[in-house]
Image 1 (tube, each protein chain N blue to C red):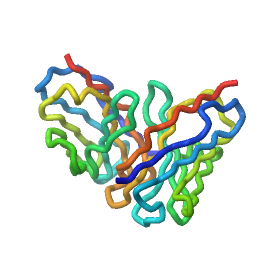
Image 2 (tube, rainbow over the protein chains, first blue to last red; image 1 turned 135 degrees about the vertical axis):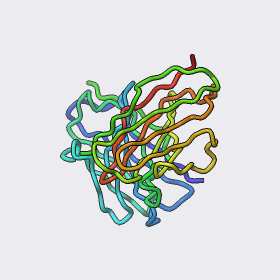
Image 3 (cartoon, rainbow over the protein chains, first blue to last red; image 1 turned 120 degrees about the vertical axis):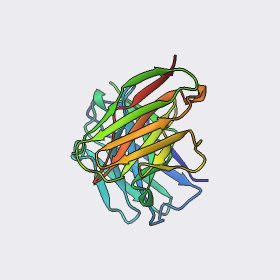
Image 4 (cartoon, chains in turn purple, yellow; image 1 turned 90 degrees about the vertical axis):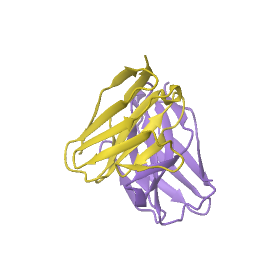
Length: 121
Length: 106
């Protein structure tokens, strides 16, 4: 059974960089069948896709966040990571990592439990 | 950017009712449309992929249809455990979500 687990600071100061890591267990991140995504959800609001990475390191980002986002992968640790720079209060959200199954039209079939990141001084 | 218009934003129905949610894409996305259920405090759960395919383990009262720009998600007989917010998600170029539909029991 594939499991994803987010980790990282729950509080980030404005203008700083948000950093999160997703650890994948029960399956290899190096499988060519999936993209590995970050998705966020501000409190009481809808879902926003941030970006994804392929095991080779190829990345695709939401154009609205592209200038501030970096997603990287560490296949040796079966992890992928998110960095979001110059954060403001508008970046306060629950951040999810998820697996994007390429063969199912890009459906996110496994998700982490989510981690709340608050941007505040 | 492809815009996804999901409606209604909320609905209230009785146990056993048929519930229908629609999602309209701003351009043709073929069948690249998925549906999720999200309960409070939980991650979304995939229910339907490629517009009409039921994810493994999902009850058969859930179904999806459509192609191109117009899609429908149906709960054939609403159960108390179906209280949740439902989201559509397109995947034509890059992923994007609809605004969500909150389903409540009348």
